[in-house]
Length: 438
Image (cartoon, rainbow, N blue to C red; front, side, top):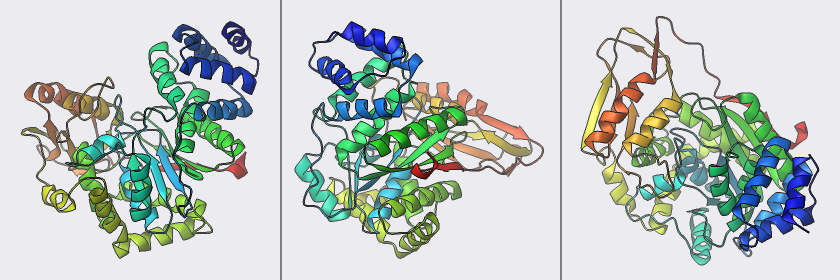
């Protein structure tokens, strides 16, 4: 078998066999097949696509390229949630303790910010002392103690994904739906989840701008996951505007706590409950999403998710009391405010522009080796649909330094759109996609 023949087969639209994919991926991980041939194959996949069966085979081959979490001996069920990335999206910090309070285990392996979308690990590491690199023994202990654990991808876990992810970034194949599908599902299978709720976002602040493309990705994930024996529910959600009122690493930890205390902004609470309700269904605690929603609302009111959140902080190296004391105070010294330029309604806040401004502020990163600031970010005092007066405060902004602040402010001002009439209501969840719809 030769790599060039496999590349030609895919270039010509042929469905590749599991054996061909094993030869290609295992050879790449072993250093026997060079980057340029894998890049050529990835470009062929980009243009020709993959069948669900082919995507499932690729995912399983990537999964077997390294180790996986051993959750044997721990009582399940194991259900996780994954987001395709957005601006101000901190729902993982809310839904993990929420569903853990229902008796569902969430073994969550998360990522870091890259580009304008935030990373769960960066948010958690804004908590002093919080460790996101856990040995398997620690991961198991914390999962048993608090019902969920948060860790990053280790060097030996799905190495094929780590290598292929970096190659896609420099070969113009990032947007390939089959490759995205295999990347997401191989990592989620490696962490030990039996079932998965996917938050597939669309809009200016999302990876997929067009809802039709986002739906194609959602269906690919559901179809491929079902062929692998996984139960998956996908929600298509609007990321045209930032989620919640806070964008920034520690700022989003604060807002997650607000939500766990029954407060927080309506859009963040709503999406968190919708995702958690589906997790309750997959975890067999509810018959349908409506019953799951009722269970999750009751759990939030009980205070147990907040207690588990603070206990998880303690288990992973942080000090819960310190975190509570830092609320409202842990901010960069380099700050400014953005005020309304007219009497009007806010008709839109462009999430993409806010996300790119966040990179300048120090919230996100352009390269994997870039450092992020725990204290940089944006707080929105007014959002879409709010009536504002000339000079009224709309945003508070914090940056890692003066130069970053000066560079980001014009972009944040450019993200604001005004109108003389209120905007139409916004649907946060566009559609649910389940196995039954295939």
